[in-house]
Image (cartoon, rainbow, N blue to C red):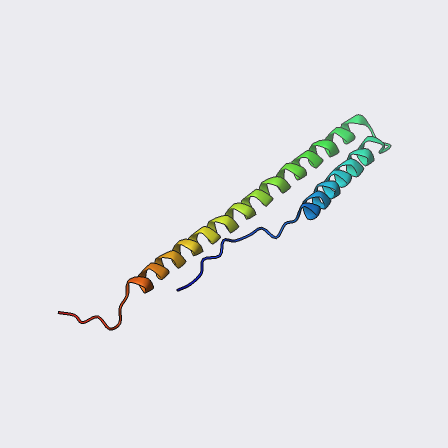
Length: 97
C-alpha cells in the first residue's frame, strides 16, 4: 500500500518577503531613473509605458508558468490515484471462471 503525500510548497515566508522587497526595490530604482533622466517628457513617458508593459508581462508569464505546473501536478496525482486503485483491486490469485 502506498502512502499518499500531499505536495508542500518549498516557499518560506522569508523567501516570499525577499522576493517582494527585491521587486519593490527594482521597480523603485527604475522609476527613479526614468524620473531623473535628463530627457524630454515624451521620452520619459515612453520609458514609463515600456516599464509598465514589462512589469505586467512578467506577472502574466509567472502566472502562466505557475498554472502549467499546477495542471501537470494535478494530472500526475490523478494518474497515480487511478493506478493505486487498479493495483488495490487487482488480485493475482483470483481464479477466473
